[in-house]
Length: 504
Image (cartoon, rainbow, N blue to C red):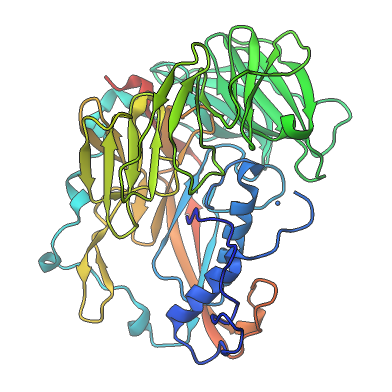
């Protein structure tokens, strides 16, 4: 997931700055660069449409990834994909699935022999990937790993949110795609389910979608929007954490409705907005007020806020602020890192995608650790309890043709506990890709999950290149091309869950 900027200054579609060099006859690598530049510079659609697969709060990034995936049907995109589900409402009402919920990804390549497109098989002489020694989470933390049903008793699909305790998992039940109807808990110790609350929408509001949920000490809070009509409007709801009737706290419009994170205190709903700034509204209803001293801040998990939000892909984080005490924790990112984000206790970052190592350290730069064979995908690397989530490199070398040799025995992702220095593998990997998800709580999630029954399947066929989707303005290609679609199939019965609250 490329979380680069908005593409200002991108090269013209034909790959030259003056627009005179023709696209045809160039190498596939040149085409990839040209199309990716075009995707970055793609105009915004009318109204409000990965870097992130979260909220409309990263609207432009999702549009860019959609463009890249559309272009991928015209050019070569090497290797299998990884389906990353952010949990619940990853497309927020009609935007279309992007690298979420095992969404299909497509690749295409000019016609060639099967032997020339087949990926090399790792050989014993190729060695082992650095992540090959990472043990599965079920071995490292057996008390934290369990299975839960993928569907409610009435057939509604579960979307995991977060853990409420070492055995209780908070689940949203969907009656249909992205239409959440209620909140439930599943107790992994007893196997029992409990309905906490129904989740009604506001009366008279059409095309309403719940966006994000967060659990506080006494309440569960969520907010919803109408993303398909272009209105700057949002509302907030709360329900007792122990179960009970949900009620609407209030509505906001304008800048206050550009919510990028939500939380709840003993007496208020709190949220931050995409442009920076944190607001609160009494649980009993009333007028929203901006919390003093929060200009430019984004809620991480109450009471902590940072000076970077999910839109700030290239902005350096410099501080964390405790909004109850206004204590400021200064952050200084090490030189040479492309990604670096801090929670209250630990920071994680990495260099270029080729570096394959992650840096973990305290916000003050102390207790640095270097974790080889790992990389950050996007900036969603900090989970609850200060654990880091990283992707694991499969590459062990290159063959005589220069193609990567991969070791598919490594786990899909690694969970790292800096308090103990422990690494544990998670997710479901197969030779064509793999999938995992983490809950859609607004605060860093305390669960990671996957469907062990799903398999990544690739199907290829020869099609007319001109029939494939492409961004507006891209010249129509000609001839035949080999079109491959990779999807997740099977599964749907149960989910394997790593509950971070159950880690000793």
